[in-house]
Length: 79
Image 1 (tube, helix red, strand yellow):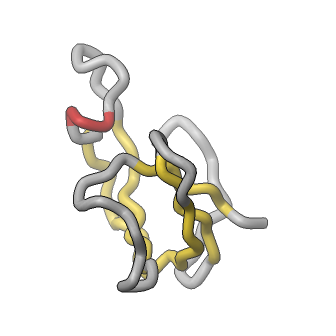
Image 2: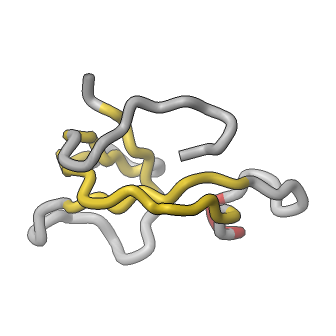
């Protein structure tokens, strides 16, 4: 979660996890919210030269999902 934005997030909240480069998505649940602010990994930054910071979210999705290992995804909060 980007540190510059406000989110209504709690453990157990339902989310949609969508692939950024193909038409695949699956429902998941927030299993943990990180306790600190961390820098985004380089692979997630649009511009490698601009630092981005945010709070980690840990999301549980079904084991039989069809995501590729390391696939870039977007998490959409379900209201």
